[in-house]
Each structure stands twice: as C-alpha cells, then as structure tokens.
Amino acid sequence: MATGSIETLYRRLMILPVVILILAGQVHAPSLSAEQCEQLAAVRPWLEALASYDGYQALLSQAGPEATIKVIRLIETSFHPEMIRAIIEVESAWNVHARSSRDARGLMQIRSIAARDLDPGIDPDELFDPVVSVRLGIRIFEQHMDYFFGYDNTEHWALTAYNRGRSATFALNMTPPRTRYSRRVMKLTENA
Image 1 (cartoon, rainbow, N blue to C red):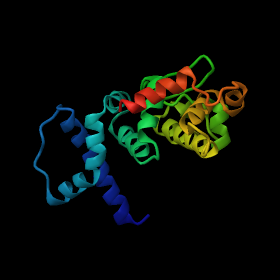
Image 2 (cartoon, rainbow, N blue to C red):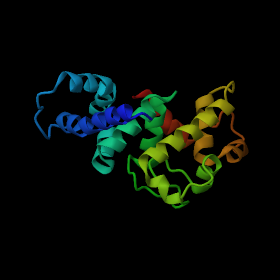
Image 3 (cartoon, rainbow, N blue to C red):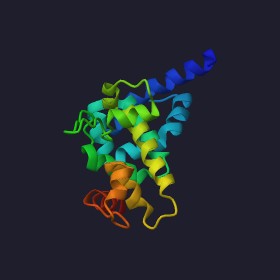
C-alpha cells in the first residue's frame, strides 16, 4: 500500500470515532474541512445504518467505533443483511462475549471446529472478536445458502444447517426443516 493510501486511511479512521460520538449525541459537531466532509460522505451509509439499528448501537458500546463500523460494512454488504442481523440477534443478542454450552463463541456463535474449516490457524478466542465472528459467520451462512439453493424454502434449510449442521438438518426428516430457530430468525427478518 502506498504511503499516501495509508495516510488517507488513517485520516478516515480518525474521523470515524468523532462522527459516531456526534451521532450518539455525546459531543457537538466541530467545523469540518472540505476534505473531512468528503470523508464523511464516504462513510455516511455506514453511519446511517449505525444510527437506525439498535443492534449496532449495542455493539458500539461493547466493541468501540472502529470494530462497529467494520461489522456494519460486513453485514450491510453481505447478500442477506437482514438475515445476518437476525441471526446475530437470535444467537447472541449482540453480546460479543456470548458463549454457549456447546462452546460456540461470539456474535454469531461459531464453534471452533467450524471456524477451523475456514481458517485452520484460528485461535478459538478470536471468535470473540466481533469482526472475525461476523466475517466467518457470514461465510458459513452463505455456504449453506449456496448448498441449499434450489430447495423449496432455501432460507429454512440454510438457517437450520447454520444452527445444527447439515447432517443434523437432514436427520430431522422434515421438508423443509422449519425449526423453532429458523422460524424465529425468519420472523425477525420479516420485521426488519
């Protein structure tokens, strides 16, 4: 990366915490230069998403502005942003420190065995990092969506597989597998 690119990225990252605090009503807006206004325009969609969604605001209080913006970008640019937000709501209620009895961790409640399929060198504690959790969770969910593409009620199949694994999903002998989990995520998605 060129030095100019690094400096530009650094300046953009420096303005994000101020803008987030302004949106949260914690500080007053300073006067911005033309360059800062341009930078603000580039991140406006992410900031509007932050301001409009309670889950993102809960994440902001736990993870800070930089991680929150990264997570918002991952979710909002995914193929199924409403569904990803609903999965996080059901899995962890936006608690970055969530841990299940089956040792699933983080926002998207990923087990280390599933994480290692995508990233063999991952440390299980990295799953508590919201950016890592969401990045891997989106990949896992989208793999299930691709696998079940063409099935009736693809979403229910993919959600059940995300929650239980593919083998357990097929073992349910339900077509489509409308589990309590998949119905709950779909209801949140429809209400988004």
